[in-house]
Image 1 (cartoon, helix red, strand yellow):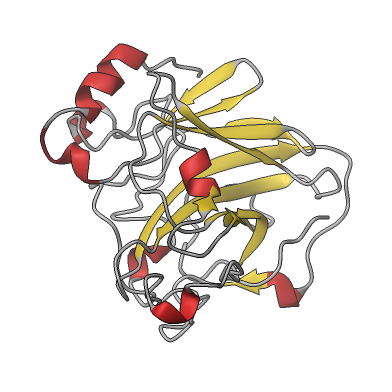
Image 2 (cartoon, rainbow, N blue to C red; image 1 turned 60 degrees about the vertical axis):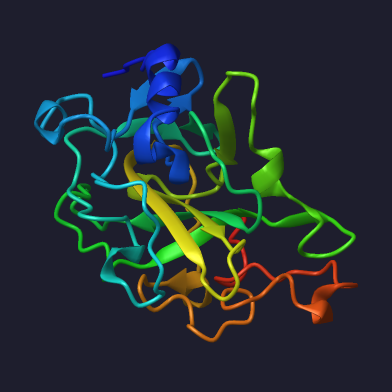
Length: 255
């Protein structure tokens, strides 16, 4: 069931209390239809089990700091939703953030097939295999610290939502999937901050393609703690003339 979350209330919430620290994925849109995600600033009792909930529950805007954290896949506690987002392969799904304050680091989007059962509710998010379908990082120099990242371009300060569009590969075979959006903020020296959220999809279409094993990752397990793109000090003099950044997690599967 589509639900529009009033923008005014979301913006007011964004300006109060500890919310100023970070941010998170609030809603999704497909075409003109809006789907509501979990709001950690509202009582869970008013959201759990609701027929409109399409997103796995996440209880805090605080980041995940470790690549080995079991909640790296879909945030904490990751409780399954009640509903799903219907979408056709080849369509865009837009992730809606009502505020995002960090400007530095990559953004990635992932899918995981939930198997022949056709239902993602019983899937172990740590055991399922994820494949990357979208990424964006450093757009232009002069270096990592002073350059323009997609994460900064994604921000809006005019009162309108921050919108992150991702296209479902047109050739993907239909089925039940989870989509995982992750923002990795690297603005603090050697202290990466992961912000993942997951929603359930019912992908339709006539495609037959599916990524091979080399594209698959598990979370945790998909990142290494010593990955120089994750454990990084972007302010180090060695990056003063570096405008190249490798987004972690391997290549995109484009279908």
